[in-house]
Amino acid sequence: MKSTIKKSKGLFTVMTLGMITVAIAAFNIAAASDVFPNKPIKFVVPYAAGGATDTTARLVSKELTAILGQPVIVENKAGAGGNIGTDYVAKSAPDGYTMLLAYTGPMAINPSLYDSLPFKPQQDFAPVTLLAQAPQILGVHPSIPVTTVAEFIAYAKANPNKLFFGSSGNGGADHLAGELFKMLTGAQITHVPYKGGAPALADLVAGRTQLQFMTIPASIGHIQSGRIRPLAILDKQRYPLFPNVPTISEAGVKNYDVNNWYGVVVAAGTPPAIVDKLNVALIKALRSEEVQARFSGLGLVPVSNSPKEFQQFIATESARWAEIIRVSGASLK
Image (cartoon, rainbow, N blue to C red; front, top):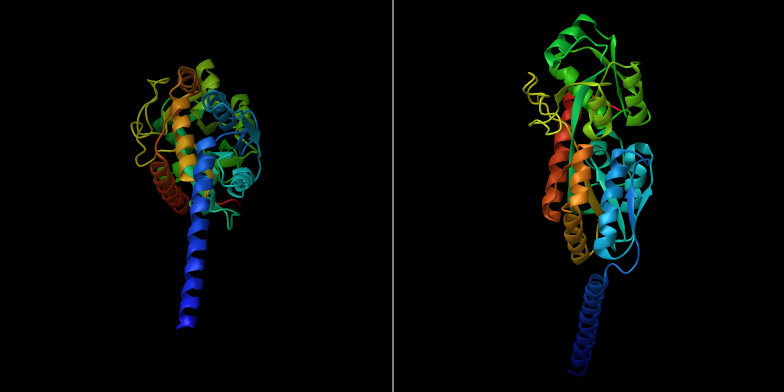
């Protein structure tokens, strides 16, 4: 009987210690959430400075600094198609002090292109919110004697493999957009991978390549100056800055829309209260007049959602890009 009582007391003690440990952990998480943030926040961009992802992060970080009362510092960790910076955040402390400017490539495209990745986008991150979408646009050098997509397709077929389109590199959204265009239209155009979208765009403007599938933020200045002739928006609706440019569907190519997007994620395991606090702050930043105006001028469409909605969005995008990669036969080689 005494032995049974001793065992019961021991079990009670273990249970009590376990409950106390859980309670302390819950209290610590709640306390951390209450004071968050109490030091600078790192905002990692997985690409080089100067691009659309970098510009987006810097615009948002300025507003976040004012909203959160702590510096939000942009750090560029480029390389391997965005995988290096993305992996860095995946392995960071799950405390909300390291955010990632999540981009289409590493989050939705790369898992279907690379044989292996050091991170799993849908398991290693806690989504915070979508920030913006950037429709792609099909543009040609003015020396190409076409003004519509139909004319371009006919011209490309009459000049097989003599037209070159640049991209930010093998496996990028712009590369895949070109491969999908070839598959859907039969146009025989040749891909030229560059080490980034900027040098690819420079060669298009110089006439060394003839066309490109590019984001509006990257190309807007060249389009407005006439150095690039836009043929179609690769989206389901026309873009306000270019109301006379048809969508790719209106131009005759169906089942074809390509959007780049930007969002924010943190490491998996970050307390939900901190994720929610960042979500509220980011949405407030997106609604500021300065961000709205700058995004519009850059060709970005501000979009926000809840962490759960963003999680579903990433899953949907991953499945969509996996199918595009499968049917187009695109690869990193």
